[in-house]
Amino acid sequence: MKEERYGKSGRLLKTLEVGDVRRIGGRWIQTRALVRDVLKEGNGTEFVIESIDFDAPMPEALFSKASLRK
Image (cartoon, rainbow, N blue to C red; front, side, top):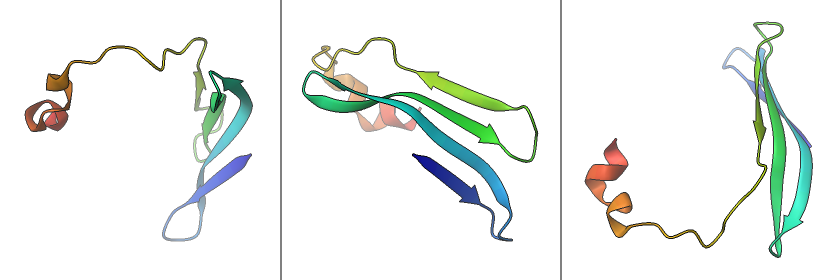
């Protein structure tokens, strides 16, 4: 899958390519993606999920308004 992001001028700015999707724990998860900055050739960011825990405990305070503003 590929997504292209354009500026208001219509010029291509960035591309997002999903390279790998796997079924983990009964859910389809994107495990690899690459974002490329078209304007700066050679620049990009690769996201790789090597492991995931869907049931990790999270404290309620993490979702307070004050915490979410950070």
